[in-house]
Amino acid sequence: MNKALLPVAILAALPAVAMADVQIYGRANISIDLLDDGADYSEVAMSSNSSRLGFRASRDFDGITAIMQIEQEIDYSNSGSNWASRDTFAGLRGGFGMVRLGKFDTPFKRARGPANLFGDQLGDMRNLTRAGAGRFDERTPNTIHYQTPDFNGFQFNLAYSLHEGTDASADGDDNAWSFSVTYKVGDFDIAAAYENYDENRSQGGRDAFRVAASYKISDVTLVGFYQTIDHDNDAFDSDVFGIGASWSFSEKMSVKGHWLTRSAEASDSDSDLLAVGLEYRIGRQLRLYGNYALVANDDNVALNPWAQARTTGQPGTAGESASGFSLGLRFDF
Image 1: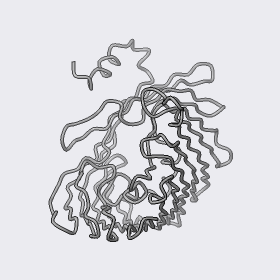
Image 2: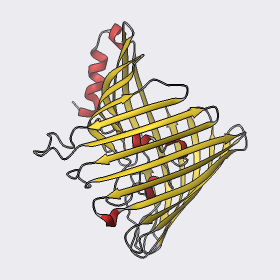
Image 3: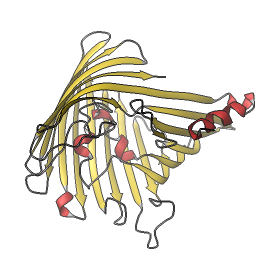
Image 4: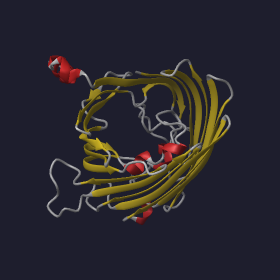
């Protein structure tokens, strides 16, 4: 049997009473892109953009709810996928908050949410925030996560990754931990986070701090973002700052844009990202979008606006301005 279909068969075989709280969900996010690295590459490509298929289940036990999730990425452009490659966990939820064990986005990664205007699209902010060896915005394995209840808009998250591979390293220096505090009240939303990786993690020892915020004024939402990375190798240190806005000018249509700048410790390695987009929501679950994005690079860096959360893998060219135009469809189910 196809391994990707095995969990479906298992769920189908369970008694009806056990199926009551199982949800099948997913997202198809596909785009046609015109990409130009500013040098020799200029092509039309198809990309599957963090498309996914997942299963959630929950069951109440005298005030405590057992929860689980299995989620995998789906590549609609080339039919490839890896089972349980995305947020996959089991845990408990109740008046005490939530505890999860498994592999999932860190609190630091999720803290970019208030400013995440172009998530999983051309122009995604992670093309700057996740650049280079000083890598954050990760989904850590072997992780324990605790989330507090909501305290008048405040919520705290703490996650600890015991080790990176199947087994812990002999000296134990491959741990990681992540902490965030979020506050949301009315039209104001802010998140701040800190994350640390031990020296034996695959990208080296490093830590980072970030803050993201948004404020909605009528039909306009303003966003801001700041991140600083400190790596054991000083050449990988960097700061990212950005601002953006979105405007819903009708019931179904909105326009958005953001600008971010990355200042790197390495010489001549700074980059700027500019993205603008138009979105048309046909319904709550279906949207069409068109984006234009540009990354301008210094002489020693080769970033582009399409590297993150997309199946398009063409690298950028050092010292050049890489740009793209994308027309996409996103269907959530």
